[in-house]
Image (cartoon, rainbow over all chains, first blue to last red; front, side):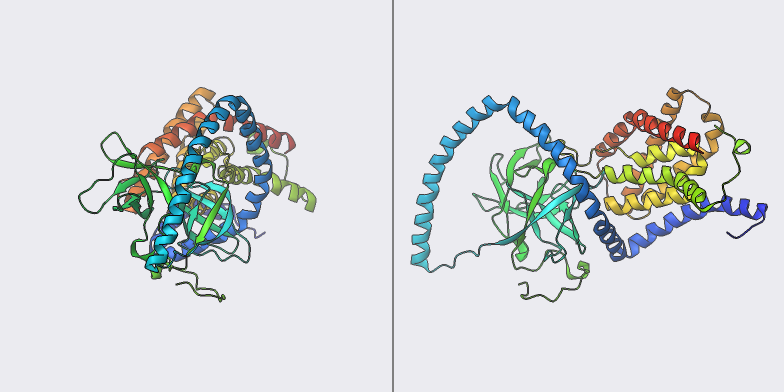
Length: 290
Length: 180
């Protein structure tokens, strides 16, 4: 260690705090000026942390399962009755669906309409819920040889969850649809009225800018729209609900509080982010998107 | 609090020095672990966005009772880590935590001798000021109005959990003092 005189050392010690405060302001400017740098740093940190969070997930998962098991035991009877009723209703729907599928096939035959391509997907594990009070995002662990790209759509078992906003070598950040920066093109399933689903950081994102005069009615199903060729169409999103002030919100099908695994859809279209925001050069890979 | 005069002379050997370094780093390492732990998905309803801010409690406590163990550089590091982890605008958390650190440093001689209740009340005020300033800074950086409710929940949780954090820190402080 270098020996310094006492007054010099005291001066340095007194200067550290103001210098670091100035450095914080500098970081703020840097973060504003060079968003790519901040994004790279975040992805590098996420790559480092994903194995740590993965290790913590095991004991935490056991605990979660134990709690869920106890809850299930308590609600066994009522759950059983609900499921039986739901099963009867679903059986009727299955008959309707089969009849419609047959009719659809026959009509396609007549029209020579091309069938919609089946989407491919990969599955990723959610290892951390991040964001704090101002953002809604989750950290995904992906394999080292992954094909995950920025802009990909993520779903849980029930519906749309969000889209990929950053990709590292072992991790990816998922921006949830409830995040205040999230904007997703959707449509009302029945009427095909287009709208934008805008996150508010609250549990229910808002519906904005619907086309035409018809306002989506509460209770209608919302699915994704392929507006601008950016999204695969028809993925389930949620149900329209009317909020207190008369604004329209969407009650999501996906359970954002208990995300464990998400499906990442590969739909062969170029991402929804403008090209200048896509930082990682496309890796050499067998097929090209879009 | 042991005054610097009463401390034994610094150990010279390699192992003792390693031991001393580990002890000096313990508060910062614990703060980093607590910050990371807020990201573990517990599967609680509405966990997303409803987490306390352990960094504020840690910086407050250690600056108040053992400022030597929470130097400005550690505060800065914890802040940058929080920024990167939560995808916050870069620089916002280091600034807030350093300002908190500076504010506590000016008052610590008076405050460190007070009762827990008063220390807690002052923490509530400082946490409100820190998170409030953070909210304003974010509005300035995002150039749009952000909802205030999540920030208020965050503040309420952080203040409500301060006794728990304080209990944990006191344990560690005592074991450090006993060993050192």
